[in-house]
Length: 111
Length: 335
Ligand SMILES: Cc1cc2nc3c(=O)[nH]c(=O)nc-3n(C[C@H](O)[C@H](O)[C@H](O)COP(=O)(O)OP(=O)(O)OC[C@H]3O[C@@H](n4cnc5c(N)ncnc54)[C@H](O)[C@@H]3O)c2cc1C
Image 1: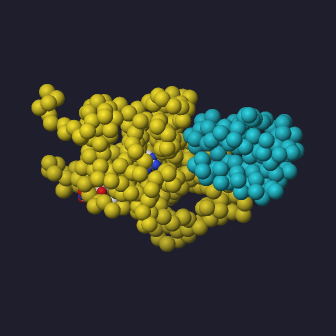
Image 2: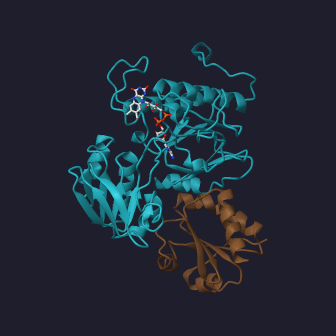
Image 3: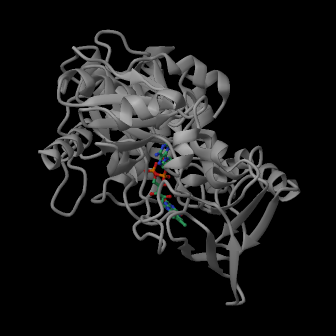
């Protein structure tokens, strides 16, 4: 069962951009309420979509480089990345079904 | 949001089975929510009201209330809400200042997510009123997350030493603007009305803050920027237009729609988009109630909201304590 991986600026390229599997990256911070709301959903998605999708998290308090590169100015921001390319961006928390729909669409567009 | 609140609540995992912090969490502390809080706390339920601001609701902005039975002195809406809140607190209800942004109502333990914390309970009463926005500002949706934000506590840190604009006129907007001044270089506060609707202390604090430039009677016409916010165009009260170069816009405008966005489709609604409730104001999810102006079929009066809050709270008590009938609170019994 896969779990969410925590990625820092130095690891981002290797673990996200060069990943074989599609990646959902969540830019978050500990003091952000909406981020806390999506956190358990991301944990769930990481295990339910194990082997199909990597769920990664970047703490923007400690790692700002990629957040700046992607012009992240509001958190949570979730990027759906396939082969190093951002396919979709979701800003703000959403419901479990809403997030799953986005993940399913993203995975479908990858096939 | 107060730090200690945040710490206290940040470890609460919403979906844990079994334990919850409260018997009932009431979302919105206007007359509907505060009346529910009076009845719930007086019947012994552990009650929390999560509310984003005194002048963020319909009663809170009403300058004078003359038709609420028993209140014969001249009183403002905000004063009446305060009285109701004080009364609820006297019976043990807790109030937290936070904006609810999401809920998980499906599980036995309900989770209410705010910008400042997560609150769990056995039942939930929704009483957020009908001051939700309908229309958006031009450019707002496109630039959401790229300069447009609804949460200063979440995003202020991205605007260190930058220029930002805040659109709004109530206490929620003012508090968020004051929070932004800790990070931003300058905060343009654009209030669509000539006067701000908040307590005198709060208005003074805003006016005195060196980082705040107040534009009263000014409405944002467009949020401008290619890939990120670069400026806002506002129309001032004399119809002159002003272009303000900003990197961020924090929007706290209101309108006339039921505030249900945070339920994210979890509750059944009618074709017209109104929440569906039964005679005790229970929604399609057991343990989840909705009262007051948030119901679009309801008569928009304080007394009606208060009554609905009372009925829902009694229904919650009945349910949680496994009674077959609602228990009426006769004072003789309590004394
Ligand atoms: C200008 C005006 C004048 C009026 N005059 C009268 C009158 O004279 N007599 C009369 O009987 N009625 C009057 N009304 C109607 C009356 O004010 C409403 O029917 C009544 O206030 C509805 O109560 P409520 O508790 O449902 O909603 P509200 O009073 O709107 O309270 C909603 C509460 O929910 C909170 N809230 C909203 N969203 C969130 C969120 N996401 N998170 C946390 N908290 C949230 C708000 O801060 C607010 O405190 C007037 C209304 C207006 C607008």
